[in-house]
Image 1 (cartoon, rainbow, N blue to C red):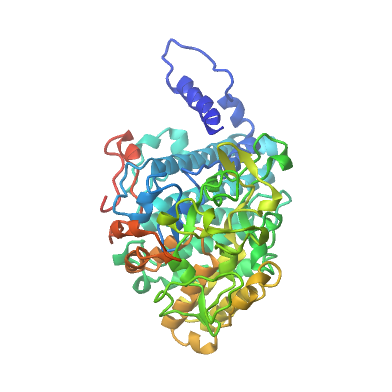
Image 2: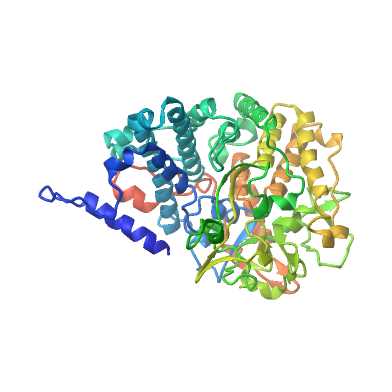
Length: 576
């Protein structure tokens, strides 16, 4: 299916760019560029559409880079050679020639290009076609979308060329270097786009899926949070590099989110069911649909997560995105509170119907599928050890958040399979965790504790509806005031909460980078995880070859084809 989509586009590029002077031919079966620019609203729609036009080799939600590159997940699949993502999780073989990295860079810049074209169309034809007010709003939406694509590029590759509508008009894309702007200057560019969107957009949109002022505020807070911890490299990031002015901006913009119509969805499990996909929890999400809903051949499916269904449960469950044992251990509780210091001392896992003295945070059962427990709450699809494709390499755990319930059917297209699950870009709880993090850095511990305890209280109340079978294995308590007396202790609570709440949602690697904790966390994790054993089955031994190198692996390499498309234009990230 994907090839059929890509080839006509590639051929159209050849007819447009490969013409000699003596050829005066107007290609058919492609959109006329002049006509397209006379329809600015459709150009805006095209920019929106690109947000969900990704694929498992270039997933815009960044699940391989946020999760597999962290201590939360193992790659999965048929073995270490299945896709390029093994190199991402071990780092030692991570090189600029990986095709998946090049695909991601290329397609994110397609998103930027569509935004730039939409901006030009709005500038040239917006008021005549749409009127002044709607043109102004559509311009703000496109600025938001462009900032969104650049946010992804910055988080992944750090040194990126800033190509805007003026560069497009001047056709000077091939003259823009990727190292003329500092990390801070790139953040300022992204923030400027989001700020222009924030200043214009309404708080609510009549059409679902369009961005609004609250989403822009949440994204601005996210940008300031990333910018406010340093440049991402451990030698110049972390606790000693916190910019208080940036933290104040995080609080300022999350004030807007906090006082909006968005809020905590009452049950944690509901957040990850498709029937709740545009609930009050969802500040901004990439919209997906089933073919039965939109009457198309394949639906607007979420093809980024197509590999991540469980083996033997789905018709094409390829069993990628496997939670790590370290991640499971992190959900252990003692008297309802995290076992900060000894959680990884011994490996453990719950067994359905077998209560023990070891208790667990309820969010474990919403996030990780485990043998003996129902898959996504449905006893008819109870998991066994047979539901792992290569247990001797990747173990028996499976990821739950990105899949619907099995009984609801499947969007299926042999040999691939995708789900009609929205991709959260920012959900309310994540924005409140951003706020709590900034408050702690500003010494405002009381409100940070209140936010974190609200989140924990929601988890406490998320047992009876979906995971009653695990009720006697769950125990979670609110943090007492004594845990928020010092910045060091409050940070520990916040960071732990963020790992459990946002687990398997593609945040962990980037969180650790922001805090300057990648090398210490990951290299310790590699030593522990390579000794994994589940009921006598050893796995994850390949991690003996893994090592995170400081001043190199904090960012991913600029893809080799981009470096040599125009030799000398781009420079490589440090260490590669």
